[in-house]
Amino acid sequence: MSTTIDQDRVRWPGSGSAVLGKTPFGFYDSDSLFVTECESAARWAAFRLGYGVVDIELLDVNFYACFEESVNEYSSQVNQWNIVNNISNLSGLDVENASGLHVQGSSLPYVLNLADGYGSEAGVGGNVTLKKGYVNVVQNQQIYDLQSLWGDVSESFNRIEIRKVFHEMTPAFARIYDPFSMTGMSYSNVLTEMGFGGYSPAVQFLMTPIFEDLLRGQAIEFNDLVRKSAFSFELMNNQIKIFPIPTYNMKMWFDYFVKKDKTGSMIQNGTNYQYASDFSNIPYKNVVYSKLNQPSKQWIRKYFLACCKEVLGMIRQKYQTIPIPGGEVTLDGAELRSEAKEEKTELITNLKDMLEKSGKSGQIELRSLEAEKLNDVLRRIPICIYIG
Image (tube, rainbow, N blue to C red; front, side, top):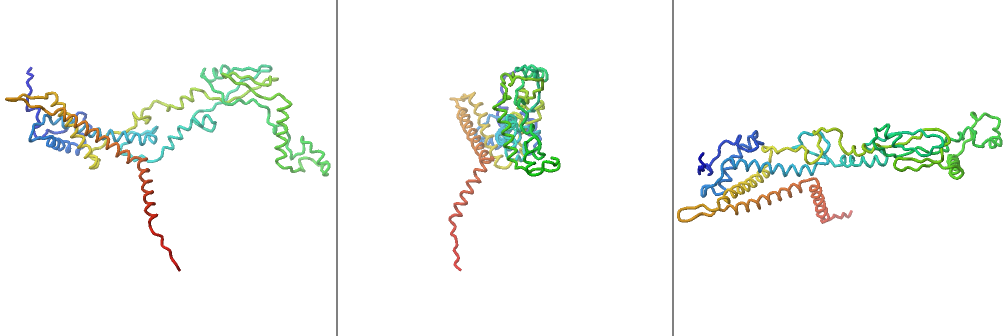
């Protein structure tokens, strides 16, 4: 096989062939405006690189690849900014394509989702089910292993986390009679003194202020605390020791979480990848070239020219000198590559800066500054004083 290079094949002939099927990825082949402007951009870049005066060692496919790369880079920068700007609004949603959508709203739903864990810990909601269990308390036995007696049996050996134990004395108000019925509250002498001693309690009533009931309930509970064995417990490693020593058999109830449920609540149920979860799958797609405005297209053209310079510089740097009759010609490959790198960096920096200014926080900042300047102007308007 011959290895001779056809020099005409590595020179820009002045026009390119049809664009369709010539771009590496074909992302925009269905966009007629992209196809049209891709060929025009190739001719423009060739002239900007000096075609007509010097040879341009690029083929049409090189130009087309650079143009597609430029649109891809613009799309990538815009989409990355959109993801950062809207990720809290899009995370968890079933959205196939967020490109071109007007994502509006605050990040409050995202913050509330994060707060669910605090709600679970505080016992005021959350996303973990608070369950109930019990152990059969046996007379004269104080220590019980809640994990083995309940967790291993009812939760398939999963670790449980005890949140509340219902081991306390019967409330005072469940152990006194209705004060309005005049029974059990030592009101019989009062009824007699008032002349109601011979009447049925269900017929006649003596109204007392509510604080009297509260004081009586407090007195009963304080008496139990001082004069009786206090109901309490010690809980360590899901083993509970109850006080006082049980004198009869009963059920002791408690509230608990399954620990793996608390960890699992941080992960969305299911493995369906259609839900947006993080930077990698927030559904932003390549921009539609025909929908871009002129400032966007101008940025793409400049980046395209820088890409062409970079490719041409790599080609020329590979063959830094070309022998000619009586001497040699030194090519400018290194200079083109250095210039292209600087231009690409500057273009991306400017685009990021513009995107940042057009973001939510940037616009709020701008509106705040605008309002501040407007108030400063209004303060300088003279106030008319009318004398009537």
